[in-house]
Image (cartoon, rainbow, N blue to C red; front, side, top):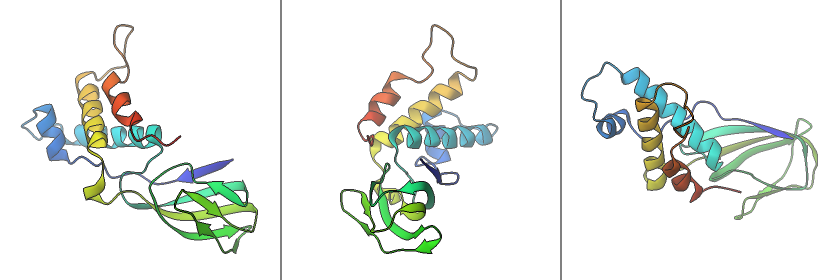
Length: 162
């Protein structure tokens, strides 16, 4: 098994873009909207298995095989690989496989995420739709209302890593 530590993401949508989408022209709810942006971004990243903002992540794998397909994207670079605490040689293939001759408990340090200008429009639209839904419906969903709007899943499915 493995776990990923990625920290809190930066939203691909700015506060101003979200306020325009929500048709909010005051600053009273900026902190709420910023919180919704982060939550929607985390939801999208988790659902798609993609990192939107460029950042460094740490992957801890308790039994790294010699060939491991990185289960998320986009990976810009592998910055370090340690097996049982010792740095080892590795290769990251263009198809997302991390190759090493060593196996064992691993720590992988990677730089992941898009350049801001390369974030897909579908991702931005999904974040905006989700923020709008949560802004309008601040309580848990009931039987007559979907928790996550259909359009969000449809947009995020287009770039999902399986």
